[in-house]
Image (cartoon, rainbow, N blue to C red; front, side):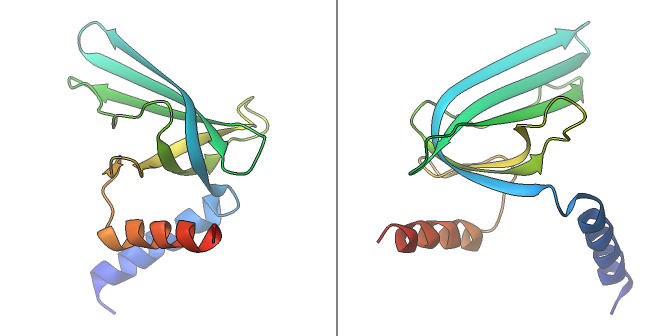
Length: 137
């Protein structure tokens, strides 16, 4: 095992130890999208995106929040509209912070127009699509 593999393995294990029980994934249709951009002194940019998702064959609604702060450049977000089918990967909110029912978004995959917030391999998207087909047969 090389040095790069050892470092990657160490970071993976420490991340799973810290956030392992909070990692979650939500899939469904978009009900609402709210994008808030706020520049502070033309230098610091804040982006907050709130997405409401209704999972298929369910009555509940999941609130997903994406927050990004960046210096000098505006942070980017993929185009998401009402009715799109998306997969959200993220962390469940901590119950002590007041965000207990929301998901802190790490990645969004828009299955309608095949866009991703964080680029993944094409194999991952194909597996998700195959899982949807098998699930609803």
